[in-house]
Amino acid sequence: MTALAQAVATSARGGRGAVVVLPDRRDVDALDAALTDLLGTGHHVRLEADLGPAARYASFLACLRGEVSIAIGTR
Image (cartoon, rainbow, N blue to C red; front, side, top):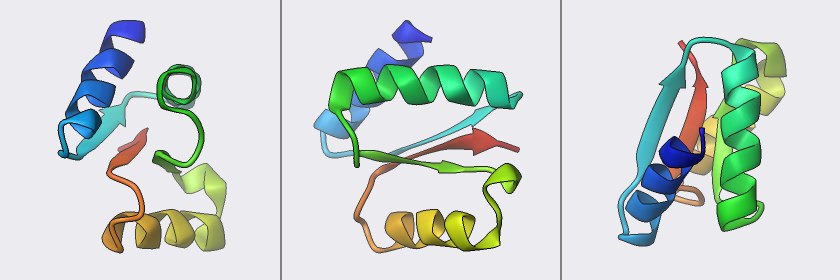
């Protein structure tokens, strides 16, 4: 996951966004931790069904408003 996190972080630092679709929650947890280590908190959101509707919608709005440029989650 470290290599993927570095690629996503490089994209974000270059002024671009990223949407990362992962196969399961375990991978989302691993990438979430790796991105937090590289970029700190508040630079990416998780979009997963397990979050519940309110948290998922808040994450969606953060992306829509340009507050974050990285979204990670499951399909």
